[in-house]
Image (cartoon, rainbow, N blue to C red; front, side, top):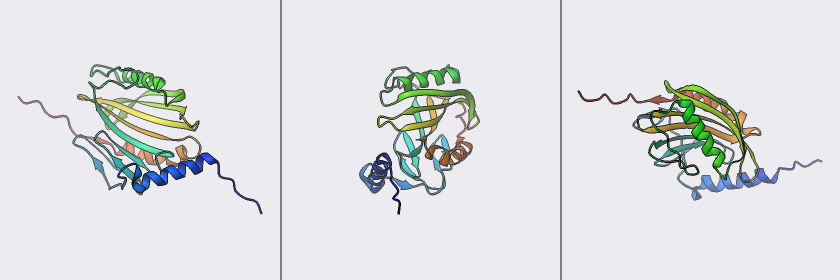
Length: 193
């Protein structure tokens, strides 16, 4: 009788996921039918979990060390942690994409960063960009990600999908694409006349 050997990294990841989902890392809850704020809404994948903070929503099916979708917004006045660069409202989408790419290249937790594509993209009916890239995390796990970004008013909004390249990335890509398609932004406020 042969035995199945499970790689140590997978066992470690499952242990970490178990701890996170049991409440040690935060209040994970089952996703509702829709997630929204005052200026965006999405339909999350059924059966996933949600970790909501003031700045973002993190969604995961099998645990954030295997795959996650991050919905995040940040004020334009806030500089990026490793480059201190800031996005200005006048920047073109591909200029913002270059700034984001620079920030990732400077991040010490992202090793062997490789930009696979950078292209214009529509996000919730707004002009933005789409980056596809790969890297290794600090444990040497090969990761692949898709990152959409758009500048809205005084805010930079991004929606990204990050997963272990082996198996997990492809297994949940269609769920992420449905989230992207479901994204809606609230109309911009009309200036008083």
